[in-house]
Image (cartoon, rainbow, N blue to C red):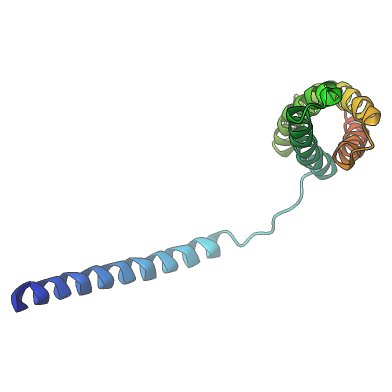
Length: 153
């Protein structure tokens, strides 16, 4: 590499650094400007307790499901029904959480269905509650059931 190539490379590098720094500074100003326009208070939704219960149910059901899959992979077939019910409750409660967040007009009907699915999962996990993952899912399903019951039709 000769001196000319070295100088051209250094100049290109400096230009790139300067451009990216300028862009980053411009982006920071844009972000600050956006924050100034969005400084209003965020109020919680009237469905906050249901959203939290559904979210917890999704989390605990997914943990339970993964535990069941690992155990079944090791040969424990007694957790098949628990895996199936926790899979179903995770899917439904994810939808429930989304609909509650959106304050959907269909939420009361979905809550009714969620009550049935949560109750079935709670009952199934009760059979395998010696596993802490199943016990946690059982409790989350019971809590979600109670919140659904408050708005179900």
